[in-house]
Structures are given as structure tokens and as C-alpha cells.
View (cartoon, rainbow, N blue to C red):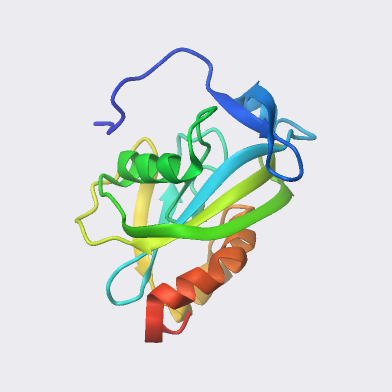
Length: 188
């Protein structure tokens, strides 16, 4: 069963932004991701457990973009006019069935990552967040196929043998200082 409150048939709109992250309009979600891509607002969340392990998700096979690949804890797009922090907390709960604790801003990063498999383009101004998760996870199977808490060594092994989202390395590097601070002695 989906954690989403209601399923809408209305098109999903994204907030288009300029290079400085200022809103310049809206676009339908799929059209914003079609080549060459339109710069839009996004968010990425990195949650750790109390042992300092990073929570990853493998995206559900039914996702239109990057299905079946590993990625950060949660990512998505704020609704037009929605604060990125609120969108990140909302979508984390909707996807994982658990609310993040100690969620905080971890910077922004701008990137342009074409996905060679789907032909879609991630042209994003991405707001990064890091936090802790202490509640049991109840992943929405429409969003998440699998979750895993990993140490840095386990992540390196997983990245060597598994497919990851095109944006994962970029957002992990950008959020790294906040992740390392939260992880303490866990080695991030």
C-alpha cells in the first residue's frame, strides 16, 4: 500500500530555476527531464542510523527514471512554492514510512547528468539534507525495491558491483561534510 495520501491524475509540476536557484517558472516533470533538460529545483536526503551507517535505497522497478538502481536515501522535487526542507521531510516519510530526525541543510549542488539508459537528463539545482533515522522503515514498494544501511567500505563494494543513479556520486560528494559530521567516528 502506498504511503501517499492520494493519487492524482494532474500533471506534476516542477519549479524551474536559474543558475542562482531563483524561481523562473514551472514545467511538467517529464518534459523537464527530456533532453537537453531544463534546470529545476530538486532535493537529496542522506540519513544515517545511530551506528553511522548510510541508508541507501534501490529504486523500484516501476519508476520511469532510473528504475532498479541504488541511490541516496531519498530524492525528489519540491512542489512549486514548497520549501525544499519541507519537501525533503515529506517525501522521506512518504517513501520510507519513517520521519527523519535531526534533518538539516547540507548545501546545494548544481549538475547536469544525462542517463544513458533512459535518455532522460537530470539538470538540477539540488538542495542537500542530512539527518538520522531511528524509526523502523516501512518502504513504499511503488517507490523503493530495497533498502540497505551501509558502512563506507560496504558502499565502495556495492558501487563496484551494482548500478547507481547518475546523480549519486555528485550529491554524495557535495553532502559529504554534513554526512561525516553526523557519522562521527564511522569513517565517512
